[in-house]
Length: 344
Image (cartoon, rainbow, N blue to C red):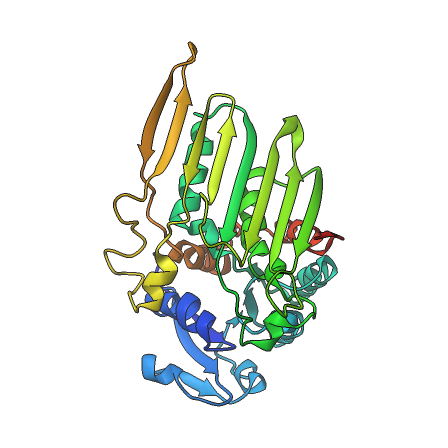
């Protein structure tokens, strides 16, 4: 990792996202300086990062001429306006998922970023989950032959409504579809591209819920590939989160990435144990021979590493290397999220 000319960075919030998914990496990567954060009420960030500037308002942070990159990690329905303000102030922006709440907003931000000669980056960290990296490795190896059916799931069991009102109020960007949908859709799009046809089904099952807490996307791809992306907040016994069936075999893998839990426990990204799955969490690869015999193999996962996203940011800003997560892919994601659905 290059250490010259670090990028001065500001966080728009220091809640769970800022504290867990952004600050530890910006502080650890030598190509960044975590310079400032916006904290309207409780001033907690300086306890973790004593040299940090804590501004009382977004306006004050955006006025800091030293800051080059702004992390927009506020409620989803504020992303577009705040990202536009940051671009107007001459900053690059890294925007949490969902990037915005419509494909039209993606296009507008992209065009405005080009006008201001500034980058608009999507934060899709789960491309670097260890379990998803296993899936990618297996597909890239070609061992499964032609893929026929793929299932990705992201399940939880939470009957209680979220205490954050913006997540449970029927406003743009709320509900499970816009919370976990961007993760699953980005993973599918990064592997298979834009589907030729899709169908979205949503449902509300928790007592008092006003927003979807279940969804399923059925994506159709050329050569007959069928991809199913499912998430529910009422799954007490989770299934395998990644299941792939091909003409020559199958692969299954649980959702076993440890990074979020480690970060919440205060384990730093540079810790030797960071991102490493525990023994016994391996995926199962089953291959069929030409004579119809089956062989089963344990498939260990590579190290999960969200730092790769921040390294990619640095390389784009400083060296002009194209960012892996294309805004075109985010537009496809938004088109799928905003399509009309079959409500259960």
